[in-house]
Image 1 (cartoon, helix red, strand yellow):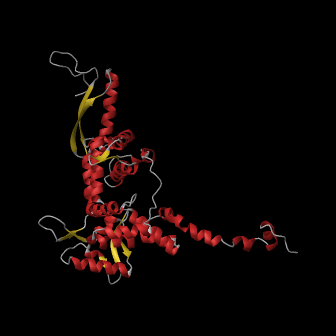
Image 2 (cartoon, one colour):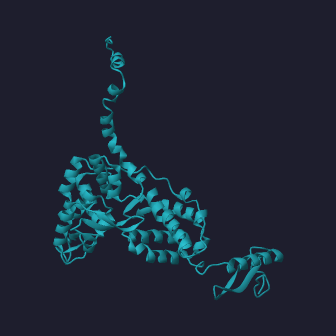
Image 3 (cartoon, helix red, strand yellow):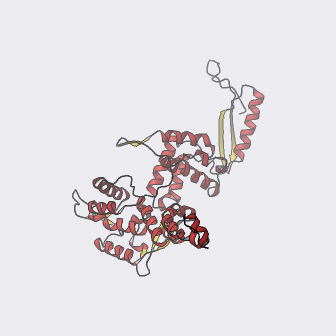
Length: 377
């Protein structure tokens, strides 16, 4: 069938625009393609149909994949193997909800993603937390997941995606400067005094080693080699990576494993209510965050988040060693630029280092004049 004007039973036009309807064999399968040309003249409609046939013939096997199907495939291939799998699932759920899971992935435009960013930025964290989601949350739930998805669709799934044509940087919301929050000695004392005792081991480990919380709580007993002082930990953007452990960290892990010898997980907590009260279960991210936030609230500590334990570790390690390269390796940063955010802690060392520099560089005669003293001939 060529282009045509769709009519009702009484002969009236359903639409002023010509329709197209054709069948082609694409990638070994018969495909029926139909729709509106958007044209009111037959010649222009035929030209539109010709272009559509050319486009369909050039389609790759997976080019008709929907956003929802692509998100599911990404989670199966990548997401479920990461420590942050729950966050990835949540992010793609928001993408499908705000963009439309039934949309064809290769047809998505920058405008579609910008609209999703605008909608998400106007939402709150839920009924219990009426605060608007932060720009960082919007970027990590919409822009960055869609960028990763479209790049994988092009490079791995061989789809006709064109992620490079989307201005990802322009779509991102501006985020505030990076945090460098540290515990003060007084805050540290009150925090440990109010924190639940069964959460002490895992948080001591986080505070003393600086791993990301999700990576640390996901550690299993077979991930650690206490004899050689190493642990296999999920590194952002890389995957499982072998990291060094100090002796006191190995001792902490060994003690934690003895608390629940039958569990494959290292870090466990004691259930406080219900029929399993008193039994130990693996620490979860939500449970860890709840225990920390409760301790903050009871001790009066404000403006401190679970990830700030990593910032606290990095700042204190750099202040103690004055070695940016060492801190970079300890945090498993891929780029030293990420570590430079902690360079502010070296300010006091720089100031101390500069003391006496003037005396060493300026002749004593000139210095005496500057100080208001009579120069000695």
